[in-house]
Length: 79
Image (cartoon, rainbow, N blue to C red; front, side):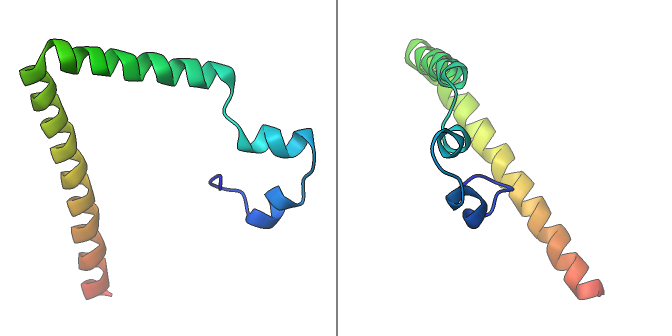
């Protein structure tokens, strides 16, 4: 399901309208393919650098979720 759209809103459509809401465009598919291919090439060509980048990205993601959780828990205790 797409964000911001209710299931009934999408289900109520028919024909080309429903397909337009649910499908990626060809340009988006090409961009995703190029980005994934470039990342795979970098990981294959420079494995140590790729591992460092992957660990750094996952660490930043984890820290951002931990920060949101701490802020949310502080807000509950103060309220």
